[in-house]
Image 1 (cartoon, rainbow, N blue to C red):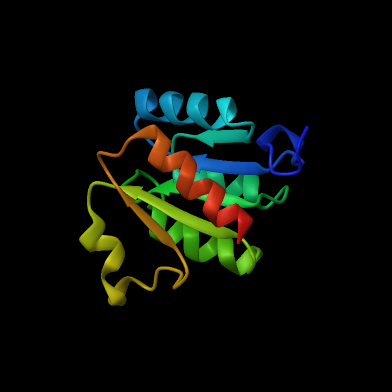
Image 2: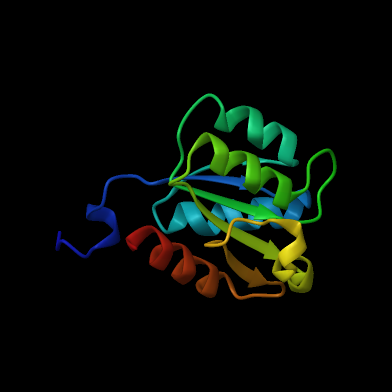
Length: 129
């Protein structure tokens, strides 16, 4: 395999927090097909509890979720691991862009609806950086 072949890279772990079950299943399938190891949860609180147990390369989170929203999850996650990369997937990009919410400054925002190829491309760019 060539060095730039996605199958040649070590498995990169992604933590996904998305409360829409169909969307979550869809995203997991696309990312696993792109050779990522994905652990997913339906809310921010469960995802945060898992982050306290083990490291991940990327947190991929919806913003609007029950129990703990994606912005609070991202803030707490970066307190645990300042090097964790954050990507918000949302239909409410203005919420994520609001400077008053204290979202991590290096977070990427992918607005719904998006094509799965765009998601995988953005994840690849973020993890390569």
